[in-house]
Image 1 (cartoon, rainbow, N blue to C red):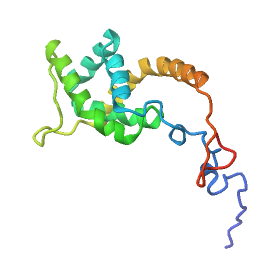
Image 2: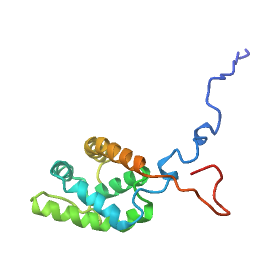
Image 3: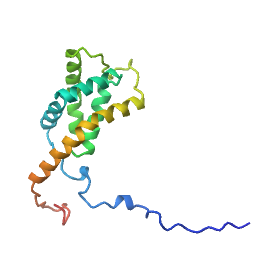
Image 4: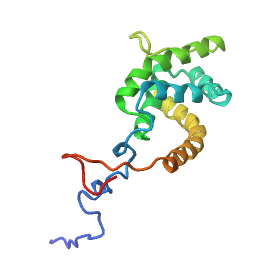
Length: 167
């Protein structure tokens, strides 16, 4: 019995996902915050708003460690082009201390998450917590990023290794 095989030509071309225009992705552009101080000021301003602080306390009461929450925030910031990975590494312990202090002042039970004795949180809890936090930030971040993009002027890159035709 022979199989009647008809090829499907509606499939994507291999490598098609890698053909986005250069500079189209956030990580292909210069970061919004090149210095750790600027990134830290951005995060402190966002975390200390009453609405964000209340949501953070809710997430901490669900059992999500502070370190996991900060790591997720930093990863999101890198993917959105706010800062680089090295800036995230520098800012991370300061944000953990800030959140720990806020939780102590608000009498919220929390786990730091940087010790071996604490258990790793369930992935479902992390996903649920990040979804609740991202509802606030998306609208505000889009407005701020649009303002920054409007203000920036492209600088002509010069040099032997610069790409031609890309600003």
